[in-house]
Image 1 (cartoon, rainbow, N blue to C red):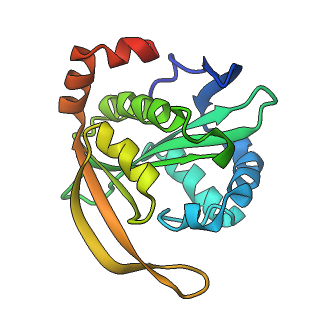
Image 2 (cartoon, rainbow, N blue to C red):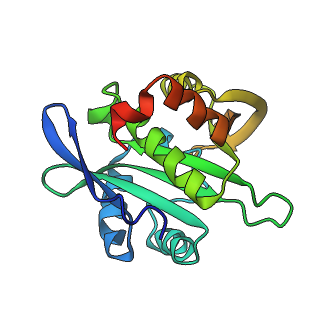
Amino acid sequence: MPQSNRYPISSPIAGQPYTLRLLTRGDAEGVLAFARSLPEHDLLFLRRDITRPEQVEVWLDRIEAGLTTSLLLLNPAGEIEGYATVDRNDLPWSPHVAELRILVSPTLREQGVGRLLTEEAFRIALEMGVEKIIGQMTIDQQQAINVFRTLGFKPEAVLRDHVKDREGRKHDLVILSHDVAAGQRSRAATGVLEAVGN
């Protein structure tokens, strides 16, 4: 399993010791509880509805098949407060591409958690052999877009009315992308990787 020798690691957030570790099948109930606690709009851009047990099982199956690696952020009580997923494209013509998905509890936003999870996801993507990583989100999720852009992601496309929520409202989807190896070289040059720990 990628980076199994690195995790778990501890990271202080809001003055409390949080833990980063890899997602395993035993976390299914915790994932469901986390997903069901989120605002519905946070779940719009995900590839699957992780509020449903069968969709969490599909996610876990992809992890066991080596196509996906997911990192959990746990609070001091052991509850999931966020995650980062690197999901490889299993199409034969783009095995070098993966999608990055980040979700953070609303109570931890604007505290650098998204950046921390994204930095760790880049490490995982490199070990998986991913060369290009993409992020997808609805265009009104400006906070998430800003985090991605500060990490070097660039907009590639806007798909109009591409996402439909449960009430039938349509939303535009923005796709951002990043050259993973170039991004790591740039962050290493500015000391970011040292700041989050090797």
